[in-house]
Amino acid sequence: MSLREPRRYLFLADNTFPGPVIEADEGDTIHVKVTNSDPASSVTIHYHGIHQIGTPFSDGPVGLNQCAVGSYQSHEYVFMAYPAGTHYWHAHSSMYFADGLSGPIVIRPKDPDPFTYDDEIILFLQDWYIETGTAQLAGLNSWPFLWIGNPNSILINGKGIAPECLPGGVNYNNAKVCLETCQGSMLDLLETITVEAGKTYRLRIINSAQLVMQNIAITGHNLTIVQVEGTNTEPLTVESFDISPGQRVDVLFTANQDPGSYWIETTVRERNIQDVKGQAILQYAGSNATVPDTVPAHPAWDDTAFGEMQQDSLKSLDVSSDPESVALNATDIKRYVLVGTQNVYTKDDGESKLLRWAVNNVSSHRIGPRPLIERAVTASEEFGWPTAIPDTIDMTTEPPVVWNYTDLIGTDFGGPGPSLGTYSEAVVRLEEGDVVEFILQNTRALNGVAEFHPWHAHGYSFYIVGRGTGIFDPEKDVGTYNEVIPVLRDTVTLYPLNWVALRFVASNPGAWFFHCHLLSHQVMGMGFMVVTQPDMLPALDDNLLSCPDYLYEDFEGLAAPTSSASFLNHFPWMFSMSTLLALFF
Image: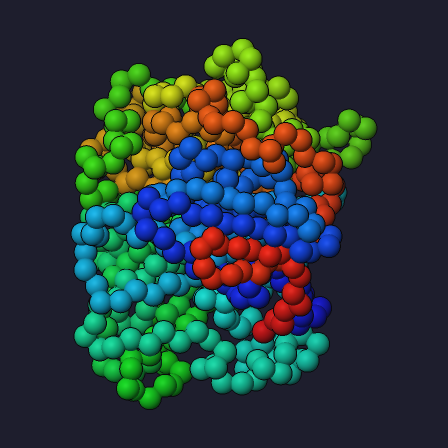
């Protein structure tokens, strides 16, 4: 992708980038009032990692849990601060998330953490495109298909420099591409984290990227993983670690090196983008600030075994304290084998096409104007639960065609072929107390490349009880499961040509999106809804009774223009959506 202009529109909270931090104590009630002052856009906000117990109408996905907030309209989200840990908020309509509308959430636990530190620091990671989310979505919805391409830069706490704008870069002196500010000191352009020698710090690291997994390291400093997505883990000391989009990892490190300047650096994993890196400077207080000389070591971009081993090494510190742990001792388990594929959808005219992602040959497509949760609640009140939900299709427990998933999808290889089977809203209907296991199976895209997919659950955390390479075989693979101390989290990395087994108990009534957290894959249909006991929910929110067409997302056409936000830093949290012209460097 070539840069055409060094300026683009951003959509922000309080004109800050990243957006402000929402902080609360576990169990608090949080109020977020969103006022959309943008004249041409609609928006929703998702609180990523918050389980929304009793408040599924505040979860955020447009057309699923609510109608969008239209221009000059307001909407209040009310929810409990749970679970404790490091989370974040972001837009969950169209691709506005790609335009900067996101920020951290920190929920402090009722009980003290089982580790100590002197201070804490948030590292908010993003990949950055000069193309707006609206422009990217237009390409994804085009035929021939136009991929979004690689990010122009990686940002740490909102700061970064595109490689072509670095000294010696191809556009360093091109004012039409790189702003004059790029020619300033890197010390001014990058984030500086100041630490005191001898102190131990907690880094709350959030990967808010829309596309890239990143490996993060600090020159000369070991990192000890102590928490992932709110789950305390057995301490794991590493030189670097991978973090996929949607994941949060809390680490401890001690400032125990000679006072000076050290690189905090991220590199891209599982995509061959070796020139784009995220960089910040770790600066010891009282030492001279300089651009560091030595960069930390990272695994090769395609060293999949490194990431697999690290993910397998994570263990919960104490599963007995987790309410979800009943899932580990269950014998009656609902198992779904979910095969993700890339397919071609042909529209009703027989000619127009779209490239989509699918699960068991169903690509998620939202059908308006009634949000899915409203249809589920209404149907369950009338007919009891479980009952069919209007305008949805049940997710199958196995793919319609079973083949060697390491081969291509074509019929020559025994696969179903590239044509998409169903373009609809897929649901898994559950009753409260059901124990569920999702087996996620990776396959090759139509171009033959196997991509990683970070799968994220709304409303739940799950145990990663198993993982393997190749094709899941229930006869032999179930016996290899870790059902003793598996890690509990809400976002898992499905590595190329791998399978991964997730288990949870359906204890949270509502309608919950389960999807790939690569934004382009999500809007191309890679996800489905988990609907749990909707007849137990409170009265429907007025916002759910009907969504006007202009407030409903249409994935077949272009989305509405984008939106942005303003923020008042006090309870109740308030966002006022408006557009801001941003500078790129």
